[in-house]
Length: 141
Image (cartoon, rainbow, N blue to C red; front, side, top):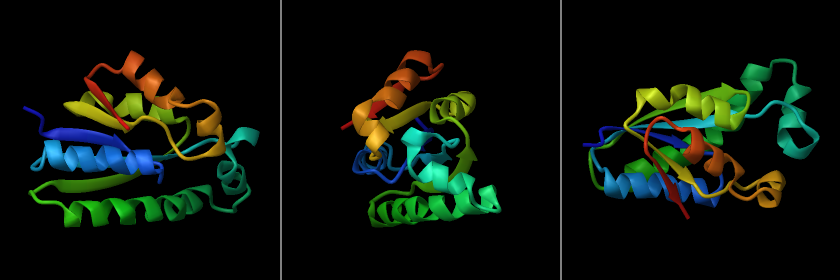
């Protein structure tokens, strides 16, 4: 039985579909929405701007809050008794997801994110999580 689900969200439509899937398939689950703010890179757009902030953790929290607000809206609109926890991490998305994987029964991830880099490397994070996860992973489109 699935009781604890990790849903990595980046604000993309695909990550919202992943949360919607969890709410439908596991309406009573304990859901953790994880947002990972990447380390600065020329390909990562917004992350570069975050790196220039005086307080990186505060900026990451601010960046993640919009994602968390949307996640809360989706949970509130769903039928069921799902509970929602939110957390933000700094670093590489695949590493951050896999470091927490053992705490959950499953991971549900969107097929790809919404950044320019994600469009160039469609499914890169999802593919690596599927290949390396110690728990079952569902990829949602």
